[in-house]
Image 1: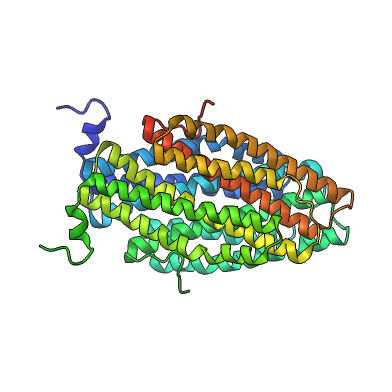
Image 2: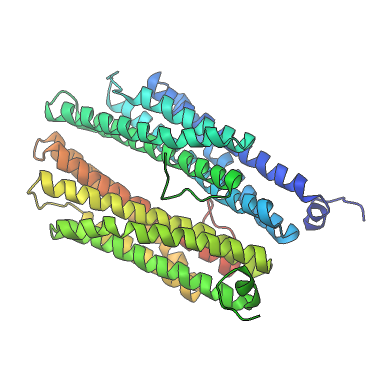
Length: 230
Length: 230
């Protein structure tokens, strides 16, 4: 039977090792798109570039499309290859990592929206600790995806440690903004925008942490959620 | 072989219909715990009951434990029964719904933390539109779980419609709080708490929407994410 169309029959004839590799590549492709969105959403705020923020919002469609594609691919892999052991763990982890990445894309869009709102409501350049916070978060996202690509347990563990640093940075952003509001040295509306941007960055870090936990589950077969020793 | 211990061999001997039913029951049990946490987190704010908020934080452990149990149960079901068609869709949907519920539990804990902080920082009783917003969100959560239990497509659809109402209510809470801050009629710190409570409620509604979309996927076999006609 010639494989003239790409369908269920087609995929089932390919060896599972190839399917798992393709699933991983799709996840990493999704990861690349999401990393771009996060970087550009913050860059738009730092450089006051409204067009860049609008481009982030536009890239949501492609991310959402890949989200559905990856879910379907993983489900089809489960149905047709009925994997066991490591491949089964990878397919179920892929479904969760995909959902984390899709939400990180949403959070980057939220940042882009608040970046536009901040530009429109304020000429202030004081972004408090947000640029530093975003550098740490972007490194966490990159490291969690590199850890997945290279099955690198030590790198995945380093992501878990960084999550605490991000929580501290977020608290310091809140305190600084609150202090400025209480002293009357910042108008409330743009301060709200910066606070939500910090909040969205913290949530992106949480999702990078979820991915790192899934990588540890894959490499070690252990579940570190909700009970991690660092 | 007598089933003296509950292990892999044991589960594989039970018919898949029974396993799927047990998985659904576990999800609904998790849903019940999460519903309680959401209701009590808001109730603690309305009645200024710090103990109730602390109890919400304490119930996180049980929710996190069930999260891991359900993931393991679903993965084991996939491994041992290698389900196809509807059962396969249900097992993969269960992994996603479980992750949504776990996050809703986290968000209820966030609300409880802000409720405690609000009580400590303010004797104000003006909760703006938050009680009304929380009623709508709680109904969405209940309906999404009822839709799952009864495979009720119409009820799942109604959840998608309510999500827009919640977004509007959140915007009105923000505008009201911003107006009070700009007029200097509210201190910033408790206003921040209320704003984050509204934000967490909105995110709970998003997760209820995800569950409703998964129910539609299960009942109709269609994917309504990212492209829904209402």
